[in-house]
Image 1 (tube, one colour):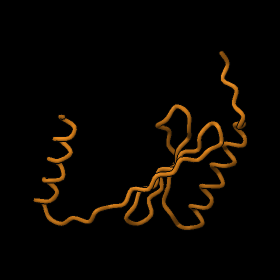
Image 2: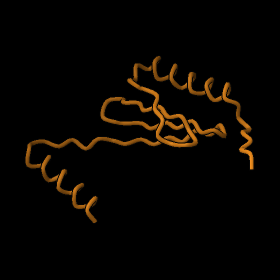
Image 3: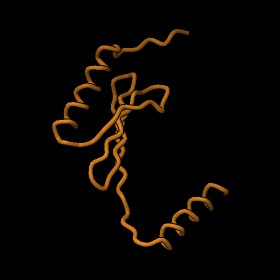
Length: 90
C-alpha cells in the first residue's frame, strides 16, 4: 500500500518557510523540530507562552498555545514538581 501525498514536499517547505518568516517578522523566537511522524513542527516562544505549530503532510496546520502560570517561591516550585510526579506515577 503506497502513501500518496496530495501535498508536495515543496509546498510543505514553502508553508513552513512562510510561517517562519511571519514569526521572524513579529520578533517571535522560534525553531523547527520534529516530534511527529506526519508533520514538521515549529516551536515558538512569545513572552509567557509556548506555541506548537505542526505543518502536516496533508497540508493542514495544527496549532496549540500553552500559556504560563506565574508562580513564586521555592515551595510553589516543589509543589508543582510533586504534582507532575504524582500524575506520572499514576
